[in-house]
Each structure stands twice: as structure tokens, then as C-alpha cells.
Length: 297
Image 1 (cartoon, rainbow, N blue to C red):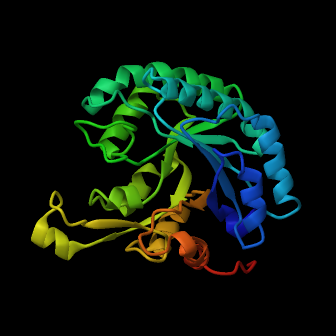
Image 2 (cartoon, rainbow, N blue to C red):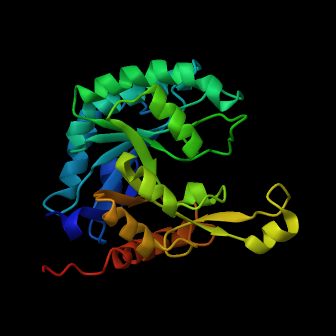
């Protein structure tokens, strides 16, 4: 059995600048058990086979895995960067095995500034093809549940941010290898309780991001959610409102296994020179929530 009966705790690794392997090497001895290299909108023409090889070499003999690589952008429209994002999806799917990964994650994309259902025909066209391409290579596709400041009526990036939308997209693409890259934060940002989602949707969670949120209920009661005062902050695990012990317990009860990779660079306090301090705290917090040190029965 893998680390702690199949649940690993790791972090995301920025790859767009071609420094994924170097970034892995810099923190590989800090206790992370998995990494998710990711690209923002474009791979910039990188040789992903070579990059995957260098990432695995950076890990060396350590008990660290790469289960998922990320490709975040809008592959549904036809601007130059959108075309690069779509090509990035194809390249990541084709080369996931060089990283040792079996999952590629990102946004669905969106027809910009249109109500969410208007994106469904183009979503179906693009991701039906990508799902077949991925299935042929033993790869799964996972959509992060981030709205990127969009909503049901308008947005620029992603339609997979709401359980009502999940119903729609999984109806359009019922492929077994299409699922979610889930995290509680993006539900809490919209005041959705994440725990019941695990009981209903865990079978579609292919990968999980370790990110949390702090909801400022006193601001909501005084100013509402559309005022000038921020009512929620995205947080590194251990600094927000989520009960990760409950989350991981629900995941275990659902039979889930995989990697929970911390998504950093969002915490309003533990950032910049405190970024890695916060991430290591999050790493240890999630390991404790997982049950602490594994003791064979």
C-alpha cells in the first residue's frame, strides 16, 4: 500500500518558465509526498517528454509521485492563447506518462461573457475529442472547480465551478475518464458546504487541491457579498475554516485514494517570504488530519 493507505500530501509546482525540475529539486526533501507540475495557458513549446524525465530525475529514489499535471487556460475559444491552451492539453495528455502521471487537470474553458449553458456545445466538441485521446493513453481528465471570478451568467475561464454545472458537463461528456480536480476552498468562496459534496461526488474526484478559505461572516452580515469589503480569503490548509480531519475522513469513507496537492500563492498572510513556511505548515496540518504517522495494524 502507498503512503498512509493511498492518500499522499504534496504541492503544486510551477512549470511555465521551464523550471519544474529545478523547483522540485529545491523542495524535494521537505516532506512532500507528491507534486503537480502545472502550466498557465501555454507550455511555451517545451519538450514535455524531456521535462517529465528531468522532473523524475529530480525526485530520484525518494518516495514521491507525480499523479497529475496541470494545464490551466481557456481551450474553448479561438484567440491565439486559447489555441495554445488547447494544444497544451493535447501535449500534456500525450506526454503524461513521461512524468509518471495518469491525470491531466485544468479548466474547461468558457465562451466568454455568455451564460454558462451556452458553452456546453463547444465544451462537448472539444472535450469529447480530448477524452478519447486521453482514454487511448490511459489518462484521466480532471476539471478544477474554480470559477475564476465568473458565475452562471458570465465569465472567462471555467464552467466546472458549481455542482449544477457538474451535472450538465457530465451529461454532455459521460466518459468515465472525465472528472474533477476538487478542493473545498472554491466551494466555500461561494458559501457552499463542501462536506456533503464528498459523499455525492467523490467517485468523480480524480485529484484534490489542498486549499482552504476563511469566511468573514461578520462582514457578510454587515456588508453582504457584493460590497467593497472582502468577505472571504483563500488560505493555505491549516489557516482557514475547513475541518480537514472531517474532509479526509469522508474521503476515506468514500473509498477515495490519490494525492492532495497544496495550491499555494493565495494566502493573504503566508505569502512572499512566508510562502514556504505556510506550505510546510499546510503539509504537516494535512498529514495530521490524515491520521498522523501511519502505524501498521
